Length: 257
Image (cartoon, rainbow, N blue to C red; front, side, top):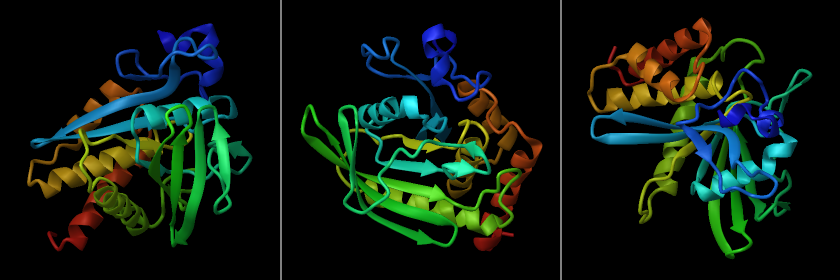
């Protein structure tokens, strides 16, 4: 298993949360990363005729930030959904992998990232970035949405806040993907470990899309499918219950219950 090779152990934030070999994101091998390894997984979920695609990733560490941005570029990611702060209490959840000042540019290997704007609206922050691949000279616009109201332990107290965040992600997706694309790129979702909050986000979004398509709701089967693609997805009972709370709030908002 590539994730357990000695060269890659330092690339894992947690030694027991690893991507499966068959679903791991494969980077183009480099001298510094000959296995092309990153702790991130491809997730594909079928809803009716549509296939929803995600990258579920751990929060970047200082030594994996270049690889993270290579993944963003290679997988043609246009939106990142981040479900943690960079630091919560004394624990780092994610390295500061983007510039914090408007017009500031940071370089990560072959990728230059410039912050174009940043705004905070209640429980989440919305950022627009310009991402340039220096070898090709190509530039893309990237949206970075960060949920700010997830407590260090447990789940968000305000379900509506999280639902608003999910709706903002969908709104930005409609905007970002409203252009001729050969294929719809995956949504990159990450927290600290890439399974807890990340899993809650993906499972909630998939179930809401299922309701929108008037398909039968089967949360346990959907979660099993997620866990087949990334280990330990939604590991805590409280997180699993929270997904149901999100769905109930969605149905109330839609006046369906």
